[in-house]
Image (cartoon, rainbow, N blue to C red; front, side):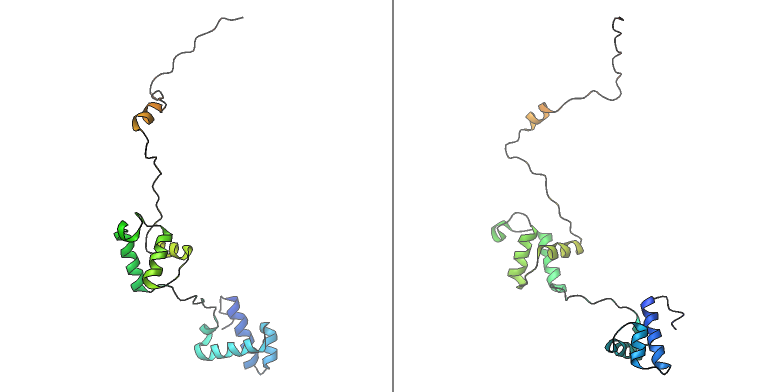
Length: 164
Protein backbone atom coordinates (compact mmCIF):
# COMPACT_ATOMS: atom_id res chain seq x y z
CA UNK A 1 0.00 0.00 0.00
CA UNK A 2 2.85 2.39 0.78
CA UNK A 3 4.32 1.89 -2.72
CA UNK A 4 1.01 2.67 -4.41
CA UNK A 5 0.31 5.77 -2.33
CA UNK A 6 0.81 9.16 -3.97
CA UNK A 7 0.59 11.08 -0.70
CA UNK A 8 3.96 11.31 1.11
CA UNK A 9 2.35 11.72 4.54
CA UNK A 10 0.20 8.65 4.03
CA UNK A 11 3.28 6.70 2.84
CA UNK A 12 5.21 7.67 5.97
CA UNK A 13 2.32 6.57 8.19
CA UNK A 14 1.90 3.29 6.32
CA UNK A 15 5.63 2.51 6.66
CA UNK A 16 5.48 3.20 10.40
CA UNK A 17 2.50 0.86 10.74
CA UNK A 18 4.30 -1.75 8.60
CA UNK A 19 7.11 -1.69 11.15
CA UNK A 20 4.57 -2.59 13.87
CA UNK A 21 2.87 -5.30 11.80
CA UNK A 22 6.31 -6.68 10.93
CA UNK A 23 6.94 -7.43 14.60
CA UNK A 24 8.65 -4.20 15.65
CA UNK A 25 7.82 -2.18 18.70
CA UNK A 26 5.85 1.04 18.81
CA UNK A 27 9.07 2.90 19.61
CA UNK A 28 10.62 1.62 16.37
CA UNK A 29 7.49 2.64 14.44
CA UNK A 30 7.66 6.10 16.02
CA UNK A 31 11.28 6.39 14.91
CA UNK A 32 10.35 5.34 11.34
CA UNK A 33 7.51 7.88 11.25
CA UNK A 34 9.47 10.58 13.02
CA UNK A 35 6.73 11.12 15.60
CA UNK A 36 5.89 10.25 19.19
CA UNK A 37 4.24 7.13 20.58
CA UNK A 38 0.83 8.79 21.00
CA UNK A 39 0.78 9.81 17.33
CA UNK A 40 1.60 6.24 16.28
CA UNK A 41 -1.28 5.01 18.45
CA UNK A 42 -3.61 7.54 16.76
CA UNK A 43 -2.48 6.27 13.35
CA UNK A 44 -3.21 2.67 14.37
CA UNK A 45 -6.70 3.63 15.55
CA UNK A 46 -7.39 5.55 12.31
CA UNK A 47 -6.05 2.69 10.18
CA UNK A 48 -8.15 0.11 12.03
CA UNK A 49 -11.24 2.28 11.69
CA UNK A 50 -10.98 3.54 8.07
CA UNK A 51 -8.17 1.56 6.46
CA UNK A 52 -5.47 3.31 4.42
CA UNK A 53 -7.86 6.20 3.63
CA UNK A 54 -7.87 7.04 7.35
CA UNK A 55 -4.18 7.93 7.12
CA UNK A 56 -4.73 10.69 4.55
CA UNK A 57 -4.62 14.30 5.69
CA UNK A 58 -8.17 15.53 6.12
CA UNK A 59 -9.44 19.06 5.88
CA UNK A 60 -9.99 20.69 9.25
CA UNK A 61 -13.69 21.37 9.88
CA UNK A 62 -13.09 25.01 10.93
CA UNK A 63 -15.28 27.10 13.16
CA UNK A 64 -19.05 26.78 13.30
CA UNK A 65 -20.71 29.48 11.11
CA UNK A 66 -22.04 32.46 13.03
CA UNK A 67 -25.27 32.63 11.02
CA UNK A 68 -27.46 29.65 10.22
CA UNK A 69 -29.35 29.24 6.93
CA UNK A 70 -32.54 30.90 8.16
CA UNK A 71 -30.61 33.91 9.46
CA UNK A 72 -28.70 34.18 6.18
CA UNK A 73 -31.97 34.15 4.27
CA UNK A 74 -33.35 36.96 6.47
CA UNK A 75 -30.14 38.94 5.89
CA UNK A 76 -30.44 38.39 2.12
CA UNK A 77 -34.05 39.60 2.15
CA UNK A 78 -33.07 42.64 4.22
CA UNK A 79 -30.31 43.63 1.79
CA UNK A 80 -32.51 43.09 -1.27
CA UNK A 81 -35.40 45.10 0.19
CA UNK A 82 -33.14 47.92 1.28
CA UNK A 83 -33.44 49.95 4.45
CA UNK A 84 -36.51 51.87 5.53
CA UNK A 85 -35.08 55.30 6.43
CA UNK A 86 -37.63 56.02 9.17
CA UNK A 87 -37.09 52.63 10.79
CA UNK A 88 -33.39 51.93 10.23
CA UNK A 89 -32.05 55.54 10.29
CA UNK A 90 -30.05 54.96 7.08
CA UNK A 91 -30.81 55.50 3.40
CA UNK A 92 -28.49 52.78 2.14
CA UNK A 93 -26.95 49.72 3.76
CA UNK A 94 -23.34 49.81 4.81
CA UNK A 95 -21.57 46.83 6.32
CA UNK A 96 -21.55 48.48 9.73
CA UNK A 97 -25.29 49.09 9.52
CA UNK A 98 -25.90 45.45 8.64
CA UNK A 99 -23.66 44.37 11.53
CA UNK A 100 -25.87 46.42 13.86
CA UNK A 101 -29.04 44.97 12.34
CA UNK A 102 -27.74 41.40 12.73
CA UNK A 103 -26.88 42.08 16.38
CA UNK A 104 -30.30 43.61 17.12
CA UNK A 105 -32.16 40.89 15.25
CA UNK A 106 -30.21 37.73 16.20
CA UNK A 107 -27.96 38.85 19.09
CA UNK A 108 -24.91 37.72 17.10
CA UNK A 109 -21.83 39.91 17.12
CA UNK A 110 -20.13 39.71 13.73
CA UNK A 111 -17.01 41.48 12.44
CA UNK A 112 -16.84 43.66 9.33
CA UNK A 113 -14.63 41.14 7.57
CA UNK A 114 -16.99 38.25 8.31
CA UNK A 115 -20.04 40.28 7.28
CA UNK A 116 -18.31 41.22 4.04
CA UNK A 117 -17.44 37.56 3.41
CA UNK A 118 -21.06 36.50 4.08
CA UNK A 119 -22.41 39.12 1.67
CA UNK A 120 -19.91 38.12 -1.02
CA UNK A 121 -20.92 34.47 -0.58
CA UNK A 122 -24.55 35.51 -1.16
CA UNK A 123 -23.56 37.16 -4.43
CA UNK A 124 -23.64 40.78 -3.29
CA UNK A 125 -20.87 43.19 -4.23
CA UNK A 126 -19.79 46.38 -2.53
CA UNK A 127 -20.88 49.25 -4.72
CA UNK A 128 -20.50 52.89 -3.93
CA UNK A 129 -21.85 55.77 -5.95
CA UNK A 130 -19.51 58.50 -7.05
CA UNK A 131 -19.96 61.44 -4.69
CA UNK A 132 -21.65 64.52 -6.14
CA UNK A 133 -21.68 67.99 -4.73
CA UNK A 134 -25.18 69.26 -4.06
CA UNK A 135 -24.51 72.64 -5.73
CA UNK A 136 -22.79 71.32 -8.85
CA UNK A 137 -23.84 73.13 -12.02
CA UNK A 138 -23.98 70.91 -15.11
CA UNK A 139 -23.81 73.96 -17.41
CA UNK A 140 -20.64 75.22 -15.71
CA UNK A 141 -19.05 71.76 -15.92
CA UNK A 142 -19.84 71.51 -19.66
CA UNK A 143 -18.40 74.98 -20.29
CA UNK A 144 -15.21 74.08 -18.43
CA UNK A 145 -14.53 70.89 -20.41
CA UNK A 146 -11.73 71.02 -22.94
CA UNK A 147 -12.80 70.60 -26.51
CA UNK A 148 -10.41 68.63 -28.63
CA UNK A 149 -10.43 68.42 -32.39
CA UNK A 150 -11.95 65.38 -33.94
CA UNK A 151 -9.50 62.61 -34.74
CA UNK A 152 -10.41 62.44 -38.46
CA UNK A 153 -9.66 66.08 -39.30
CA UNK A 154 -6.36 66.91 -40.90
CA UNK A 155 -3.74 68.72 -38.95
CA UNK A 156 -2.68 72.04 -40.43
CA UNK A 157 0.49 71.87 -42.52
CA UNK A 158 3.49 73.32 -40.79
CA UNK A 159 4.70 76.51 -42.39
CA UNK A 160 8.27 76.56 -43.50
CA UNK A 161 10.25 79.20 -41.70
CA UNK A 162 12.93 81.29 -43.35
CA UNK A 163 16.21 79.45 -43.67
CA UNK A 164 19.29 80.95 -42.12
